[in-house]
Length: 377
Image (cartoon, rainbow, N blue to C red; front, side):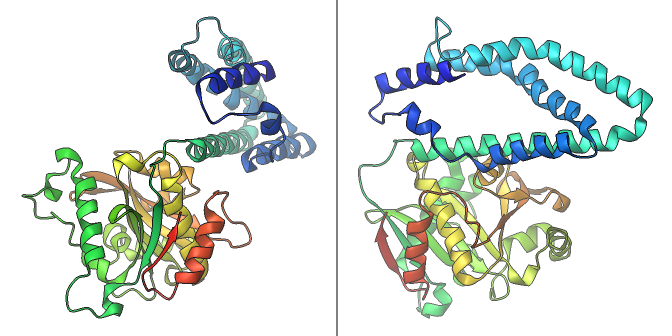
């Protein structure tokens, strides 16, 4: 595995200006998921149910069997690998873990034949192991997004706008019209959602919740390239997207099980980003800004209705959201998408590991009065 790391780094450094030092990489702090995986092994081995180790091994090694071969094929095409350099560890596990998985399956069948009561512990352990691996993959993707050098050559500005009702302007401000135009363009998606096109009834996305929400926006010069809405549920006078989608009663039930109250939470909505700016760290600035807004406002959690058609739910999960599956999924005719309810926990003592978070916290702290402010990002 270490030899593969050096081989892949050599390939990368030969074709990229953003060099990687494998020694420095190896000295970095372990991701939270790796620590959790270590702890799970120790908990099982030293606990009262050491037999559950077989369930952990079965589920993890089965991942190689189910997905290893396809992953190797994709990696070969990506790095144009002709001699196996850099993929030997992956190839070996894709081949050998088949026998390991078959052995583990036979042992589990034998164990359950003699002790059926072990089933629950085996299932729980396997599920915990898979959840931790999922978190690890999310952390890898988040790190890749942060490392990506595909940035615009212009400086991106962060701007925070107060709800228009508080500004008390007789007409809609230009910044909101510009953001709505961007939203309409992104949602229209070249005709995927005709309602947001020039002839559609939702053209310009004139959503009334805009009037009661803060808007965190990213600008390239005078043009918005990304935005998200933020509102405190107990202070919002406009329509709540999540309440109208999932129903307040169901949301309250799901939040209670998760340890939160509806009245204490914040809501994020209309998170969009121009397609040309979806590389690099731009998307992380929006997530970091929303977290900083919630922390500054004292909200313990952020709720959002997220789509599944374009894997928006996966993007939210990558950045730390938990899907409240008890709320179910709801089809939205407006967005032609199936929506899920996402929950971001906002613990100021355990902030997410976003490189942009400290900068966004400073920006939000300076501009939380709600007036338009800017900061170079």
